[in-house]
Image (cartoon, rainbow, N blue to C red; front, top):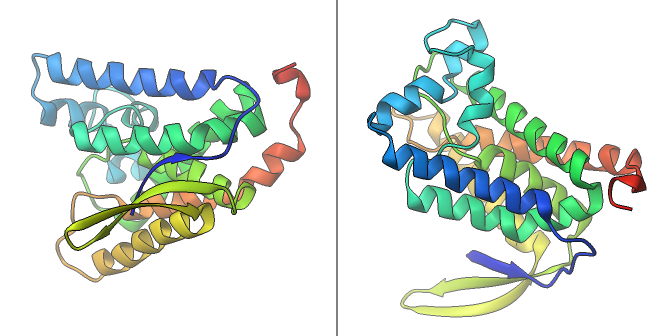
Length: 225
């Protein structure tokens, strides 16, 4: 299933969501145009599990700071496009609920927790993690609690046929997190780990679910009004 829009209107223009998407696009263009090869950039500014757990400075900047830089880096157009599509579909409604400032804080915290979830699952790894998917996963966790019955326009594949259906968010996002958990379990039982940080997705998602109500409870209306 591939979601591409929702029927969940917002009251305010999604300034932060658009700014985050723009920032990710700008960093990706920088990566592509940089004279340095992509692998060197990833190792310099990606979140390396062993480094962020031990503060072993393998990179030119402090390991903790690489958690933030890694959130805006991507490995290719498909990686970037899928993350930004999910951020656009689900992020604007969470921004609408939280307000501009708290949405930024919430997004970054989800990314931090996601990075450490991946690190604790792979503590000896020196392979850098890059991508916004951990932070975006937190947005999905918040969305599934706040708007479980919102209708999501989704591409569903039946062998060679593609059908557009409107499904409740709880089904679309529930299916997505189920895939993450299944692959996370399989990856831990395998000697060769793939290129996807499954536990970053799981960690960010759980944190988003657990913290969204707290953020909304303490929200000030003055952030918008």
